[in-house]
Length: 152
Image (tube, rainbow, N blue to C red; front, side, top):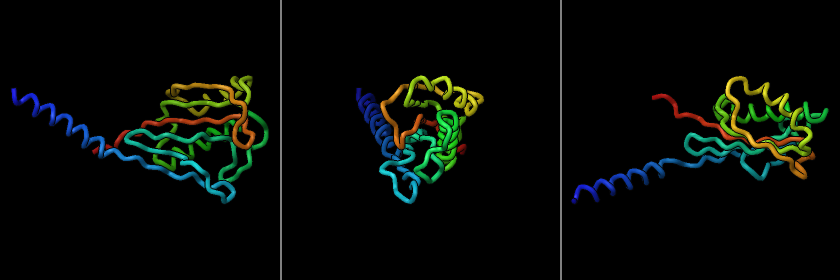
């Protein structure tokens, strides 16, 4: 009878140690027009990287690319690619995206651009219309990526 409680205690303690080894890393956003943003561009915990929503702004600027949903969608995805790269990841590692559209009628036009960025595996995805997006953007996308531990 005594080995069972020792085994349970050992398993519980090993789980606590594993949880303690996991840490949360907050990565500040790149300033826009020299102004810091009030959120992290990415947060990593364990093998998961959470990206803040990205819009179709020019890198480092509060200015959206001109031309509407098509160019904004492309710049949004390029901004996502850049954030992933800064954190050692790529679009191939994205497992989930949430798409916010200023107008749900832009869904087909957004999809035309979106599929050009995911050549192999399409992430799980949700899309919805919002009543307003930052800087008057037509689209905002947030993603979650899986980053496996380095091979040992």
